[in-house]
Amino acid sequence: MSSEGMARVYDLEFPDHLDGYEAEVEAKGYLEGVKVSRRGSVYELTIYDPVRLGQEVTDEVAADGSFAVANLVVVDRVTREEISRAVERQSRSDFSGLAPTSAG
Image 1 (cartoon, one colour):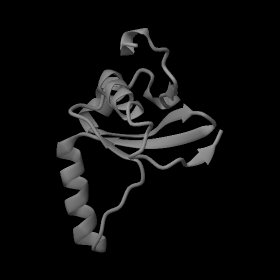
Image 2 (cartoon, rainbow, N blue to C red):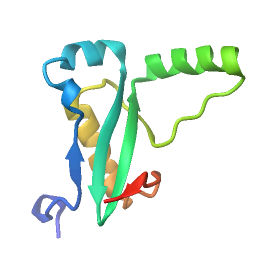
Image 3 (cartoon, rainbow, N blue to C red):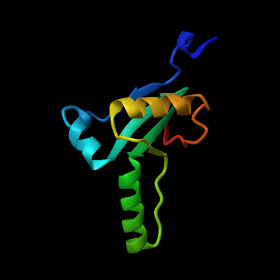
């Protein structure tokens, strides 16, 4: 069965504070609070673009000696469309690269 004929097997929820601020979030290159629900598990994602991620890693390592973020997803641009595509790609591997943050 082609992916076009398959029903989406997850729910994607963007944080409410994104509404009306998409351009600002894209410019900042960072978004927390994106949630994916699948089969009773919830994955809370932290989204970065590559430039902002590099800056964040450099700053955190310089300040604290390390950098760690659970469920990190890096996209070309922090937009709903790019995030949706990244989540769709993750769904193809049953979200194997992510860890549930809670049971739904």
